[in-house]
Image (cartoon, rainbow, N blue to C red; front, side, top):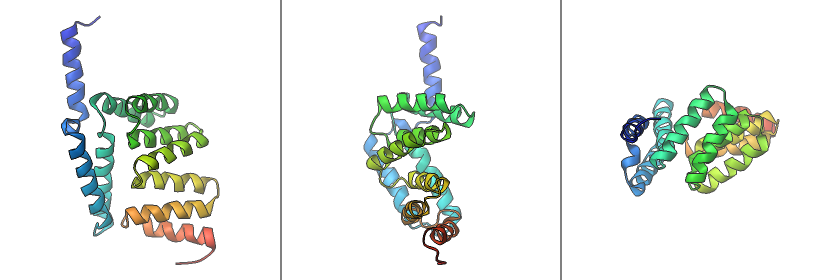
Length: 188
């Protein structure tokens, strides 16, 4: 068993590795996210939009307490390793500690979908959007799930929300045209 002082040093190192964004007050974090989402709406091109998307998603991932941020990081590593059920557990733990954190619900939705639990994924996406209605990535995921089910009208409606929130999302216009054609049979 490790000595208590050693555990504290290890925990501090892990917290530093997870990023220092958690050190900001929650109101400052949210203000930064709001600014980035506003900038995303007016991004001049796809390259800038892609950079802003990444920044927003990182901010959402680090919006929780240090413990929640570590659980989110663990869940992401498990997702990358294809350990979807274990990732679901990590994100569930993050939700237990911070149920208001929309990104925990979003990431669990991804893990559930990859694990074959589409109904659970859809429930989690609903919770995500209830907590953060500007989560463009959740709408993107809804569109993906609807497309996989050949529900083109729902896929198109969800993608319209992506474009509303993130007009210059990479490949967004082409995807919108494709989904519109499949949903209503029209070219735009």
